[in-house]
Length: 212
Image (cartoon, rainbow, N blue to C red; front, side):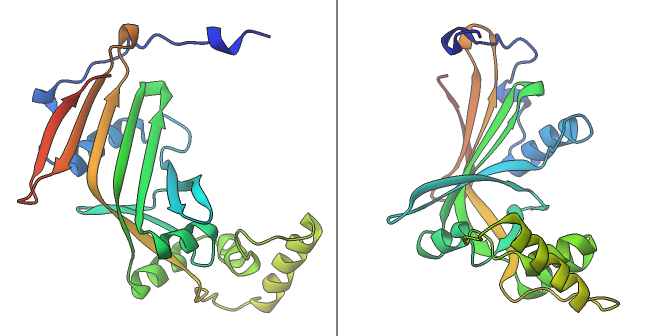
C-alpha cells in the first residue's frame, strides 16, 4: 500500500481569472455547473455542514434540488440532526467538489425553510418509492436493524397502495442564502486560483482573489 503522505495530484486542467468571472456568484455557479452536469456522477452532491453547541460540527452529503437567484435548495426530514442544528444555528456551509474538473465551490450563508407549498410541489415529483421512504424513515434516529426499517417501508407501501401519497408534515425544503461564495480552480505546484465573492454594506457582491 502506498503511503498516504505520498499521494498527490498536480492540477493542470484550467485556470481562473477575475476578468472571466460573472459579477454575480450564482451566475458563475451556473456556468460551472453546466459544464459538469452531464459529465460527472452526482453533480448535485454537496457537503452540508451544520453546528450546534451540544453536537459540534456535523457534515453530510445532500443533493441540490433547485437553484434560485438568491440561493441553493435541498430537502430533508425536519426532525433530522441537521434540522435540529439549523433550528438553533441557521448559519451553514455548503461544499461542492468536482475532482474531474479540479474545482471546488465553498458557500457560507443563512438557511431558511422554503414555503410549505413549494415543498408539497416538489414532493409530488419524487419517485413513489422515495415518497414512501420519507414516511418510513425517522431520519437520524436509532433503529434496531435493517429488517425493521424494511418492515416499516412495506407497511407504508401497503397503507398507500392505490392512493396518492401526501407529503409528511415533518419533511420539506431549505434554502441556503449565501453571504459568501468561493470558487477554487486547482493549478500547478499548489498555486491555485481562488476568488471570493462577499456582500458589502450596500448588499453588492465584491470579488477578491485569495492566496492559495
